[in-house]
Length: 320
Ligand code: NAD
Ligand code: SER
Image 1 (spheres, rainbow, N blue to C red):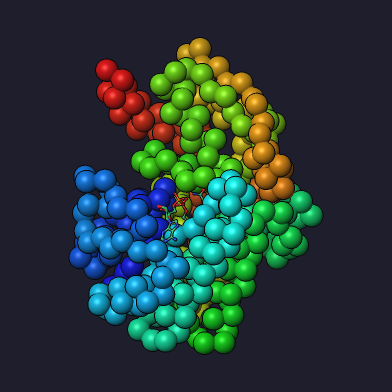
Image 2: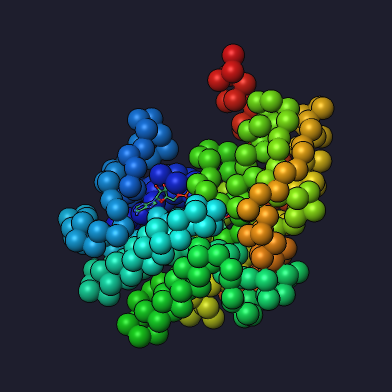
C-alpha cells in the first residue's frame, strides 16, 4: 500500500486529486498538506492534513519520515499571473520547493514523485498549433521558467539518481469545485460563476484568444494514468504534452449562452493577454497517447454542460 503526501492540496487540482487518491489508496494513506488550512467540511476533510510550507525542508523531511511517505504528488506552486506580480516568490516556491522534494526523495524512502508542468513552458517562438512534444522552450514568464527548470530537474533526478519522477504539461484546468489560484487560464472558470450569478462577464483576454484547456475529470484521469503506467513504456518522464480541448474565449462564451439565455460577455484584456499570447493554441500529445493510452473524454459542449449542471444549483442556492 502506498503512503502518499500531496503538497498544495488545498488548491484547484489538489482539492480534487486528493479525494481521488484517497478513494484508491484509503483515506489514512493519503496525507494532504498546504500553507493554508482548508475550511472545515472542505474536500480535504476526508483524511489527514498537515500545514506545510514546501520551502521548509526540515518540516517536509519530518512529515515524510513521521508518516512513512513513499510517494509525493507535488502540487504546491505559484501560477502565472501571481508569478508575474511577484517573480521572486514564484522562483522560491516553485524551485526551492521542488528541490526540497527531490532531495528528500533522493535521501531515501520516497520512491515516486509527481510534479506537474504546464503549457507555460512554451513561449512565443514555439510552434503554436500544435506545440510539438520536443520543441523550443523559451517562455516569457517567470512561472514558465520555473516549469522548464522543473522538467529538466526532474529528468536529471531520474537519469542521475534513478528516482521515479513523472510529470505532465497540464493545459488550463477548468473545474467546478475549487476556484483556480492566480493563473492566466482562470477566465475559463470565472466566466461560469459570473454567467450563472449575474448573466454577464468581463473577460481579461481578447475574444479570439485560443488556449489549450482540460476539464478536471480528464486532468485527474491523466494524472492517475501516468502514475500507473509501466515504467518500461515511458519514453518521457517529466514533460508529457497532454491535450484536452482548445477554444477561443468567444467560443466558450457562445457555448455558455446556449444554457444561460441573454448571457453577455465583454472583453477588456489586461496584462494576462501578453501571457496568453505567448502560449500555444493546442498541443501534440502523441507520446502520451502511445505510451500510456491517453485520450481526453470531454469536449467544449460536454464540459460546458457539466460545469453548468454542477455550479447552477450551488450558486443559485447561495443567492437565495
Ligand atoms: P493552485 O494555485 O490552485 O494551488 C496551489 C496550492 O499551493 C495553493 O493551495 C497554495 O496555498 C499552495 N502553496 C502556495 N505556496 C505554497 C508553499 N510555499 N508551500 C505549500 N503550499 C503552497 O494551483 P493548482 O491549479 O492546483 O496547480 C497545481 C499544480 O498544477 C501546480 O504545479 C501548477 O503549476 C500546475 N498546473 C496547474 C494548471 C491549472 O490550470 N490549474 C495548469 C498547468 C499546471
Ligand atoms: N493555468 C495555468 C496558468 O494560467 C497554466 O499553467 O497559470
